[in-house]
Length: 181
Image (cartoon, rainbow, N blue to C red; front, side, top):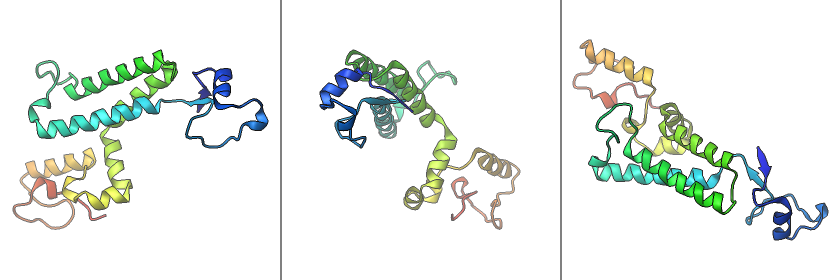
């Protein structure tokens, strides 16, 4: 979905040197066009970058992986708060520069946060993308919650067996419930 350019249609046409409809080539342009997409790529990609940097920092410094309000389970992670603050700074700059509409920046922020926090998105990104599936070892790939619950239930019952195949002694949780596909 597209919106008219927040830069202003007449101003945009003058900037691109378009005087009439015949001069508009209706093709991809690296310098932009006189329309805006429904969500901001600037905000979306800045949030993805910030989130990935946060993941790396959490791996390197485990103390950073904590909730913001003294252990409350409903409190957001510090990384999420920092990413939202970075997004608000980016949004402020874009509003001052008239680079985007407010609605497309908020949509980008919502879509980004849903992407980061949705376990089903993570599961399908791993299992639909053949490149990721071939690079990431099976033990590190995410699994569906129902599958994980079944594994935990079987381990609690003392079965220790595999969900697929025969029981094997000394099986690790990370080895259970994995398929070769």
